Length: 82
Image (cartoon, rainbow, N blue to C red; front, side):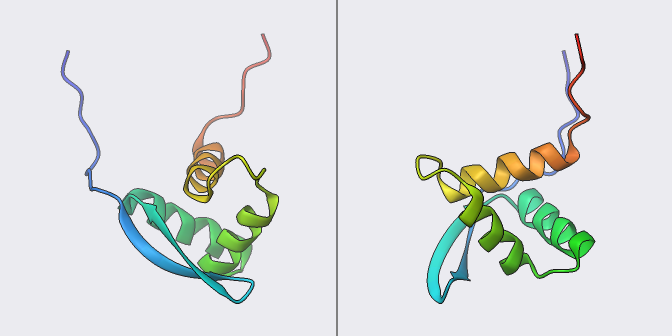
């Protein structure tokens, strides 16, 4: 089986300020682009989107994981009702 993969990149670390505190988040380029698109669709900055996700996530879930899962949910089709 051969798969056509999208462009792949290692995670890139970026600094984000949440509630006045700088933190770093490592995400692949595709997720950084998706975060920018999701923020723009809501009329907010990427930093504001990341802060909102940070505030909503449970403490046992890391910020990068919460971001990836949020962005995946935005792109994935709705779950089927079986």
